[in-house]
Image (cartoon, rainbow, N blue to C red; front, side, top):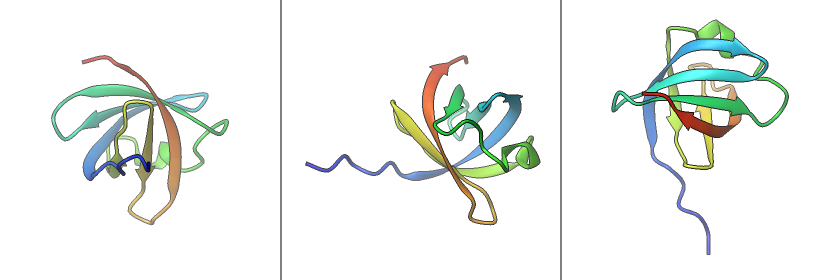
Length: 80
């Protein structure tokens, strides 16, 4: 059975913590720490404070920039 693909939602990258970790805010106001599955996400720092598309999953999430760049993350922990 295929896992259901999470719906796209708007999110904001609040802070690029470096080392592949980001703080994002979901459309519902929740804030989460995401940890890049590769060592880092090459474009996320350019989107600090800006909107990205998020496919949120409880184990892993995907961010897509306005230019269509994609990074996959482990969904680490909710902080708010």
